[in-house]
Image 1 (cartoon, rainbow, N blue to C red):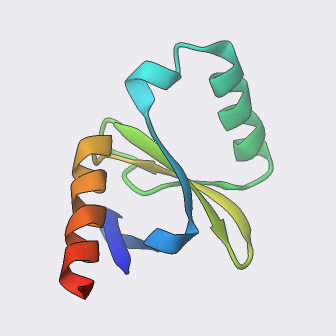
Image 2 (image 1 turned 180 degrees about the vertical axis):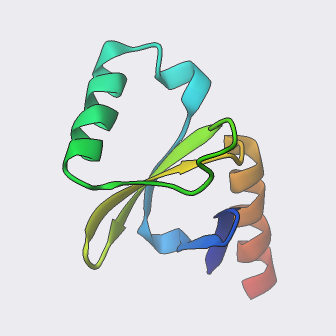
Length: 89
């Protein structure tokens, strides 16, 4: 199913590798280094450049790994995933 993660961006739930809270994870140097390296490789897509980022979602898409910077919280994204699963059954 498609999950809305901000503005006009949706992702496929089966392609999600991980969903991370921006505030809690970016205090660690390794996470910041990882995001910086991914940005240099062109793997980062900021879906809300004018809003405070609340989460980042790592996806394995057919074209490769993509990291979405989202203004939507982890909790809200998880609720959207759960409701899409319930809708399919």
